[in-house]
Image (cartoon, rainbow, N blue to C red; front, side, top):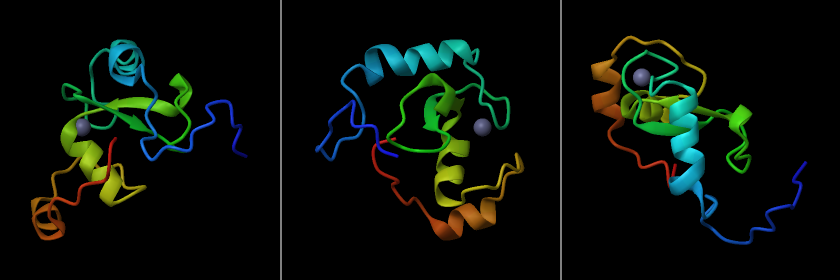
Length: 96
Ligand SMILES: [Zn+2]
């Protein structure tokens, strides 16, 4: 499964050009729109494997959807669930 082409032993899973190239490219590709709710996107999310930085595994998301997805995988509902969000709180997902 793990290809090893990045050879990463590091904890930081993001490649060096994540912020300079990959991330802007994905935002550009998706028209700076959140792929979940359609609002302006600010984040780039790994759809599946967090170690897979290919464009096909990445999507633009707004900050809210990104947090929501990270804390509740699989739910693509665009509805705001303020209750749930407030109760689960801000669980920092890491670096993505
Ligand atoms: Zn969104």
